[in-house]
Length: 388
Image (cartoon, rainbow, N blue to C red; front, side):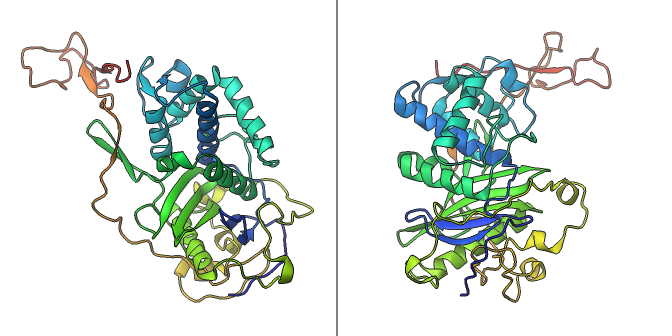
């Protein structure tokens, strides 16, 4: 295992691996490069919610009401009608697994009292945690040029949520949830497929590429990897698994840096210049060919990562390098894991409008005879409130 100390900004594909207990950094590439967080934003949404529960302003049973603003959010979303209420506990389950943007807004309105207060709380919490490169303008991560973070700041947030709220760990390791008869699977594909994986969240918009914060525990040692800007979700997941695997193999407490030891996420050197966020749209959503270095995440030449073959040293642009890391084939999901019940009301489903034919009770989803060819003539009716 070769380690290289040469902190630079990093052009794209920021990555950082650290020990959540000691803060020891095992790998860092572009750790301070500004990046759009996408749905990794929801980790902070959860943290602020946990903080409100600790302060007594809400509880896990507090009802979260779907507002018009919440329902208006673009997908990914649940689509519950305005007025639907679920508990904060169920909202958090959906937030972490489905990454539903409407639920994030409803949760922000409930916990903050109003939307703007919650966003202000997200930013004040970021400052308190030392996340100086982070700015939030929404609670879900739908793209906004002003919403930025860095791998380093996400590492600080990851450590904080593990340290401050270990009692809520279960929210981050759910492999799937069941809403009525529908099973929703976690976008974090390391859970159930990578040994020891126990969190935390993925995110994606065209501008950011595929992001992830992933944690895993083996032998009492927990590592976290922040990987940003993947061109594909599968490659992001495989590279993240490879970095974690190499981190476990590297061990802790030994360093080639002498008495000072490895840097921690608190002492990681900051480059003189960090630049602006890289816009990944041309490469992720417009399918243009990306520069080779966008695939390396500071580990090895892009071609070897892509092919999961030879391992070679590529120190350029790294702060620390787990240069033996290569993409790991995650294989199939571990069978037999039962989904967690999200809550006991089915997803909204189509019901007939009042003028639908009623002669045959078995044709509940039939199109009304007077409907036009371009309209389904169906509407959605909410089920009873599960929390009232």
